[in-house]
Length: 258
Image (cartoon, rainbow, N blue to C red; front, side, top):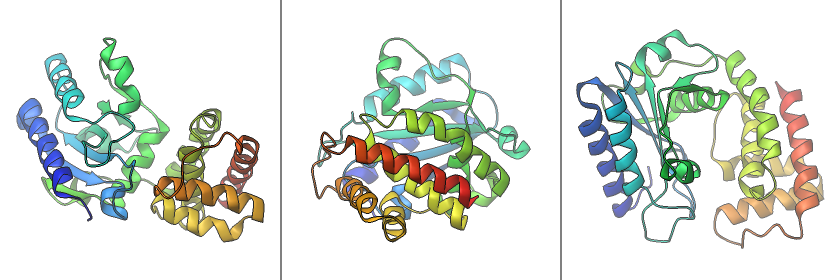
């Protein structure tokens, strides 16, 4: 795990918030994502997954949201400043049932900040993406509080992982414009998962995918990889067509690899 001191302090603060707001219903808190799989990149979020014994009350939701809005850094992250937080809360009973798509009890992420500041409250919902989050966390998550991940995070079947990726593709492709780097790297990671059954970092997935692409597609994906690592400016003004064509081809590769 590669986390700077100020980021460790932010993680510890988030765990304290979860304890304070959720009390005895909190069973476990796990760190997952880039922080444990390959190190935080310049714009990586800090990903936390919490498991609770019972549904959250309105007071718990509102209090947790208020504290996370204060603790989480705004996007884009400022070097040396607070990181963007992504916090997902799941009920133990929901995880045990293994339903598809997975149901999250509470989700906080910086992409939702505007809605939250306008008065929305995180409510339970089902989403294919949550099944992928649980599958990846089951593979790599580190407990910050509670038992080892295998005791609370159920294994997600290959069938459900593949279905989640199929179901997530349309929204992912529709969100390409303006979010080219993230979408292309997410597609590369999905392609790798569909081919191998394993979850790896976005930049590692790009490195895996690049030799499997044509020269032009490889150049576009490498630009996304380097922008993710902070090596080049994340500018797609001259590569919009290349990004769209690459996204379409990687989507086809994902489907054919399942």
